[in-house]
Length: 307
Image 1 (spheres, rainbow, N blue to C red):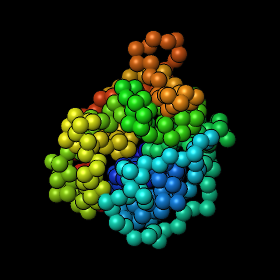
Image 2 (image 1 turned 90 degrees about the vertical axis):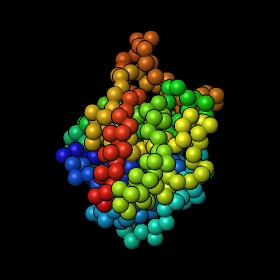
Image 3 (image 1 turned 45 degrees about the vertical axis):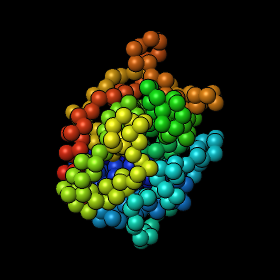
Image 4 (image 1 turned 180 degrees about the vertical axis):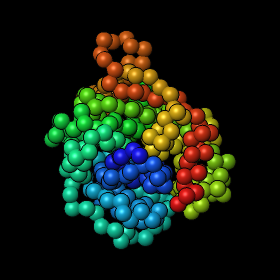
């Protein structure tokens, strides 16, 4: 069984990733830590609680973390996820309570207590960078950081930057420089994992109430951008992190050096991936860019149907 902490900013994609993780018995979800990102912390925390309740996992502990990036103001993704973050999914206010411990303290305590924990990072890396800064020793104790973020062929927030990296590039730079084992899943992979009308229909027909919930969040006209993505569908980002932990055989990539631009206004948040080894900088991440898309959706539908 894989022990993991899920760090997230729910967010529609985060919600589906949480469902996938909480439906999978081979994953021991030690806790869910929440950061500001897609929407503010005042929404991401109750959203995480709502999802845990929705799938019947009231045993899962949720911890509130950083409410803003390390040294910048928060720029949200409301136009995609809605004001409250879960546009298309109407859930009641949560009955579960957030834990009193700060998310970064929980990460430090958990990694020190149990070697080999996987950190699944679905949002800006503020919580994880803060934990690494406060307790540098934990970077060598974790099993790996599997993160969604970055791009090396074009961004979705600026021409070169993906949202999570753009939101807190300083935190991302800390994590990539930490020496921790990192698996990076960026837009170069997730833009191959497209939710098409046929896959929306399959989610509704085959994946039960959780699949219907996921389809409801993704079935929004403003999210379909065939003129941008070149296909009738929208990319599915964060669930790829959980799918990789469950089925790494579905994915492929290459060990590379990755650095994050923190100073330039033009290229803030760009992940500079040395794909061809043109520098002498050592590899610090496994950068994934290949995925068995049909296998991914088979896994997603099968697991969501369990809930």
